[in-house]
Image (cartoon, rainbow, N blue to C red; front, side, top):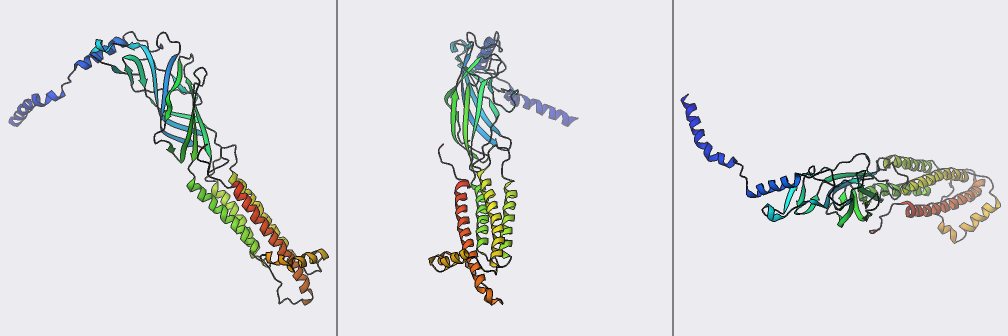
Length: 399
């Protein structure tokens, strides 16, 4: 009992010393600020726009914070600070009448605010303008800076994928049924800062348009380039390997099934690669990526190589007397400078038992060599054309 009394006496002594720190001191500036709010909000109708203005001029400036482009859903999302500045005659005061106060902080629910709306939003019926605070100057200028997320449709154009360039547009207008605001850009219209990089994309250029007399009063178009250094290695490497496999198979002999098996292996590799890039390739686009045309034509070449191998295997096995024009072509090529252009050069088996038909077989073998060499040149030229026409290329630095 005694100890409890001692503790109470000790706390009573400490209370006056520390309790003074918790006292809320009301300064003269706070008093003037409270009076200013009471005077200006007393007869203020927040649902009505500023007096004597059928359309309130509003200056808008955007500060990009983050952005993302989803090519799978054709959606562009931007998170931005939206600075809006307008003049409200009802909020003008003389600083001398309120202790020299030149600005005050108000809640957006207490004053009229413009209804800036994203017209091409993914959810057109959704409208939200959440503002924490607004700053009012003594001359009636009001500035609100809400942090908003804008999400609009943006159709992906994937012809040059993965080096594709996308143009996404944000269209703004008045969200009210009766237009009460006339929006225009303030200064540079949009600041990027260090936010031009985001989720594998880079904003290369932006374009701004304003037309206060139309439904779309403000328009922002962002030109974005995909950062595809990693993807392009994954794509071009297998394409190059598949083309080398097809060309290499043409250099093999047709006397056994090694060449046929090699060509079939190359064909299987093409289809495997198609299944592989399906994981990376965006699906929702009206454009077909040109790299798919390369794979398509390479598959056609590989199938042709398989069929051509079967034809050559039949030719080299022939023992009948060749036609005159066949013998003429063989002699013209192999008894002239043209024999140095034949690659590879297959020869008749010297251990052949049927010596009477060795000469005939040699002529047919020479014809097979000529056809194979010509086909090799054609395939190489076609692949060069395909790489030049269909392989994705880095776009120019400026658009």
